[in-house]
Image 1 (cartoon, rainbow, N blue to C red):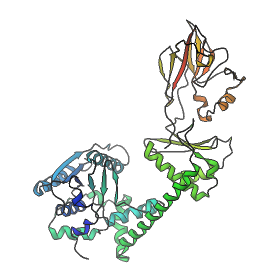
Image 2 (cartoon, helix red, strand yellow; image 1 turned 60 degrees about the vertical axis):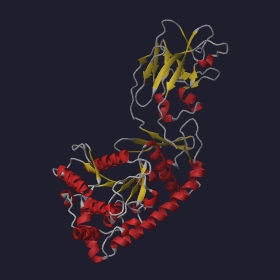
Image 3 (cartoon, rainbow, N blue to C red; image 1 turned 135 degrees about the horizontal axis):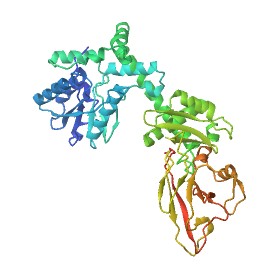
Image 4 (cartoon, one colour; image 1 turned 90 degrees about the vertical axis):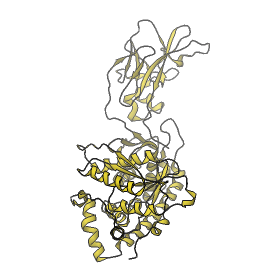
Length: 464
């Protein structure tokens, strides 16, 4: 094995002559990997452009010692050093995920346009990630492993050591006399990744010395497969995406989806949800959720009400079908406040339950005022907002008397919203259904005091 030199990472870096205005931030923990990376970068990047950032998570009794090690090395080397302390909730689950999210939030806050963040993930990290995802049943996207380059905030993340083995890093560090810190928690094989790192990968290397390169090649082929699947999904999305209408910002046409076979349905759905995740922060569905959408929701009868739901720590997602379309709702609560509430003119009444607010706005008298513009009220009227109605029927102005359910169908109100429509009652009588319609005989009148309902809905739908 040839000794590791700075030339081994040059091809992974941008043209340095064209990046003289950029800052190269190094994620510097003080461990072997980042210590070697920083040492190599010192030799090829001017110190005026090189900065090390250390994240103190405060999770280890040694955290301050690690910070001191990093700061002292940078001082001796003339490298700009910055330390950021993050707060982790130690009583919560998934400390590792919290720490990762906190780290990356710091990195994104530091990077400006044209800046680079360099991280020290190496070939063994890549192998560990691929094996871990394989054990979890990932597809081509997950088995592509750790990307060598991607966007992060305003800058670009680079991993120049991704094809370098752990052994090569260790040899370099020992040969050059580097010192580094050790995190004892990395040896705890009760954690899945540590078991892979400490037991499984060394065993694989003993039996198959080239296993790192072999897994890397497979990951590259998976990446190519994922690229092809993305291209196919773009083509299919052009056929199944609806233009915006009065339901969501965009939706998928079920009739068009059924013309695709099931693997292509899952592929285009995955592509669509990836876009929604970027735009709306919803979690991407896993294999089981996609299977249920394809096997249960898409073929369901038109009058059925299938529901596929999932969530993460922050967001709840519901996928439903309505009027031949698939729609996605974000944070649509199962329960809400159904209390009868009095409302005054020009008062903003918060409805709760992600339903927004209602305002009764005074209508200005104009010559072209018509009954459907609003509701006529009189002094002393008791105005209330309700969500339930004992009256079996309602007659919108200019339409036939029909049940509320039939009226909702006429006005294309999805079933999941029908018990959450704010109803305006005056003196105990239904006079208007949100901003959908005004009841016959209750409309605005010239020369009288009139109001209109302004329902300020929250955006519960997701779309591009």
